[in-house]
Structures are given as structure tokens and as C-alpha cells.
Length: 116
Image (cartoon, rainbow, N blue to C red; front, side, top):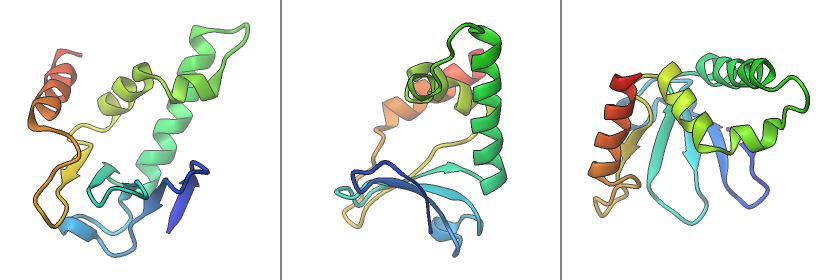
């Protein structure tokens, strides 16, 4: 079920089946022209909590003119959301065995999480 549409056919979806051996309610990133999938959040609550925490952090960091759209699209938010959701994103291959994130990217993400 789509949760957040990027207006280009891509969206975050609520998984109502527990796909990829995961849990019902996990949040999956759907890219319209890519059959590979990332499970970005373990649950809807984790997704919403991350967005709220990110906006609160932005407000604390910049009281004058917080630009929430720019922050959520930034690499800083990507690192922030990884810190709040250890072990995610979980990368699952398409039917040909191709992953969306390459193994070296996943290792780099895990290293960044451990450093923080």
C-alpha cells in the first residue's frame, strides 16, 4: 500500500504481507523502473518516528528557517535515519540476483552506523 508518493511513480509502501521473509507492516521503497527492493524501515511506527525525529532535529539545528524538504532529501538525513533504524535498509535482489545497493555500499553504511 503506497504511503508516500514522490510524484514520479516511486514511493514508500507499507508491506501488508511481510515480503522477503520480513514482517507485516515493514516499509519498502518502490522504484517504478527497478525490480530490486529496499526494506527501509521495520514498521510504520519506525518510519513515522524517524520523520518526526528528523524534523525535530532540523528545528533544533536551525531555528531561523528550517528547510524540511531539503533536509529529508539530504545525505545527513540518510545517516540520521540509519542511526535510528539499525540494520536497515535491508536489500533484496531482483529475480536475476541483482541487488540495489552493492555489497561495498552496505559495508560502508554498517561502518558509519558503528562509528556513531
